[in-house]
Amino acid sequence: MKILVINTGSSSIKYELFDMDHRQILASGMAEKIGEDKSILTHTKILASGESVTKIEEGVIADHHQGLNRIVDLLIDKEHGVIQDKSEISAVGHRVVHGGEDFHATTVIDEKVIAAIKENIPLAPLHNPANLAGIEVATSIFPDAPQVAVFDTAFHQTIPMRAFLYAIPFELYQKDRVRRYGFHGTSHAYVAERAADYLGQPLSELNLITIHLGNGASMAAVEKGKCIDTSMGMTPLAGLVMGTRSGDLDPAIPFFLADYLRMSLKDIDTLLNKDSGLKGMCGANDMREVIEKKNAGDEQAKIALEVYTYRIKKYIGAYFAALENLDGIVFTAGIGENSAEIRELCCRGLNKLGIEIDLERNSKPGKEIREISSPGSEVKILVIPTNEELKIAQETRKVIEAES
Ligand code: AMP
Image (tube, rainbow, N blue to C red; front, side, top):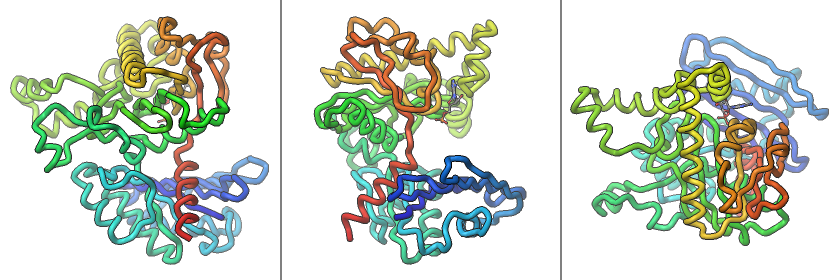
């Protein structure tokens, strides 16, 4: 069974084609700058040997429809393609950012689902319309293949009210849906499952803290396989320090910026989402660059790293208390998978909680799942490469098989 996974942004389409029976990825790529003068399509064909061949096309891709058609042309192309005909694609799995309270799980898309995703546009005004555009064009290009939605928010729908409700008038939750939703759910769910496989125990018997540190960053407290708290909130701005997002801050700061500095709402939005986080504190949003600056003696970069890791350490303490009992901590995504230094700083001094990192194990780079806690550590510390696209493909397969 071949499943195409697509993640549609306002001017981009990322895709991966999986052969689920042979547990293989056949091709991946991205169409960028859709609707601009110079669109770029990067397509990578993955050979059976594991080697890959990349083709980059430049030109004008006027809209998402043309973008996905071009991607399909490449997938069936004699030289760069990996299938003979688009009918070989059994289903299309879509990453959908916001499912609000309507979706607790992956679902086959029908008119009702489309209407519900539309209703959730106010909660994700940038992402949900783009995701809907992806669903619309994929439905027209693959009319016979089921379209499936995998929501970033779904995994967090098990969070109890005590953790999702903000202490503001209750009607704002009831009428206007103001509450914590959480994001990166596909990644948290995937690494939690992989952790259980690695530890050889059912997920339903494990308490885990999963730490996704990429350009965006979030943590989740996962109790016996169910998420009970997460650091992102109603929007992805809350929680940890990120590349360009502030994460948690005093909710009165925007009033100060508006009243005292006369900033507009739009400027405050840009400041907190695009110019804060690591970038705001030290001028670089890429963690590798921040670490390089710190190593070259840059004081701002040093303090930015302290703020970044201190926030994570605080959340580890909070989630330990929420879970009451902890079996494992999982680091994932670009920074979590690759930076031994960040992992060490987040776990430093937590020995009394049974969290002991092994410096030598931690320092060894790797692409595979690995354990970095010391042999005596009560809490296992794992590094697990995330794979949101694979998880979307697996979920897609599960729901279409359940329906048939
Ligand atoms: P992602 O959003 O998961 O692709 O992660 C992107 C982040 O991972 C960027 O901040 C990168 O700087 C960071 N990253 C990638 N490789 C490394 C590395 N070797 N050390 C530190 N950070 C890294």
